[in-house]
Image (tube, rainbow, N blue to C red):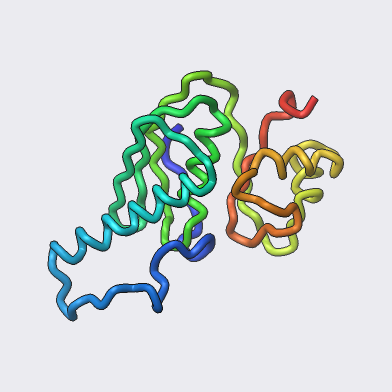
Length: 165
């Protein structure tokens, strides 16, 4: 799929929590930076696991605010969910998707939530009717647990209309 941009200051706070951040020396060295990067990669892997998003031969590379994901997923929908789960993390600004898909399908559109957005309003914008908001909610599970709990900066999957029949 390629490169996807996210708002680095929006999303789940898996890392960069002041309370959880290990003490770093005034002049960080390569070993400390490598350890911190490895901890962040493990937190990202754990987040995917907690969401039940399976990636065969998963590999994550993290450089600064960019995560590159490799592996194989069973469907286009799961591919997109993995990208969103990684990108909707505070501190991540770019996801480079290098995954392959067993069963290819048309790609969904992505929507960045703005202040005042609702799933029904987003549904009207993309599908012409507010009535398809449950499809957007379903397309973003397990990242979304409640249709009323979206936030500015969050990126959502908007599946193709033919998936809404």
